[in-house]
Image (cartoon, rainbow, N blue to C red; front, side, top):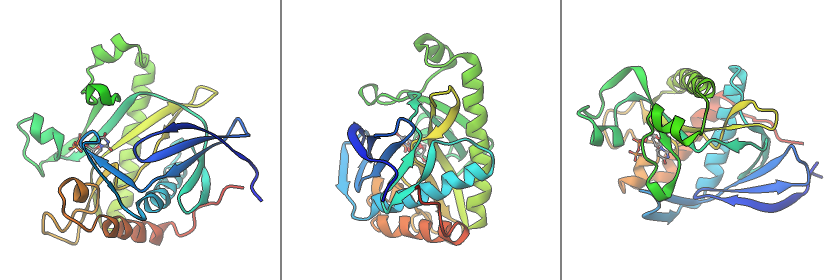
Length: 251
Ligand code: UDP
């Protein structure tokens, strides 16, 4: 018996579907097996990816909660379903980079692998039609997406997430290279970490492996056609499970 009934589809994204429930304080998220990259120019179905990302995300949200960082997460439901608080997503992708890689190295004279201390925080406007462009403070203000105070809070939360995840992943032999998070406002106006935190949204390198390709345990395996994508995500889950074996089940 569940404490809620599934309602209509609210939103379908590239990797997830979001459903209303009969409870106003509860939204259900289904993680899909679809993989996309390069603004959906590259697509594939990867059997098991949805479940792995759901299971990894649930545990990472619980870790953040334990660190006092508010998130939308309420609990797992099933292998590839979780329940979350309804939020109004801020259309800003917040990226924190600890090591230079990916788009940064294509846009700036910074070599791949350069340590970034302090970590670099970049904000991008979340809109596929515009190709998720880099935001400036002035553009953010012009679009009226956040007040100055809200931007400061969003950046504070993102740095707190980075601190918690960096330590957590290091303890399980993974280097957190960079990651993207999305945040949203709850009904009572609190800014919380939302969306997902998984190898689709984080770059993770195996600290025990020196080969630059073999150490990749994230979506770059898909982007670069390295193979073994689901196996790599499975390895991340195995290590995360070692620290957080039993996430809570909602209801
Ligand atoms: N990222 C993401 N969704 C996006 C863009 C980036 O989850 O739409 C993640 C990506 O997986 C990486 C980090 O954000 O962990 C930084 O990505 P980057 O800006 O280097 O872009 P990319 O090289 O992935 O195009």
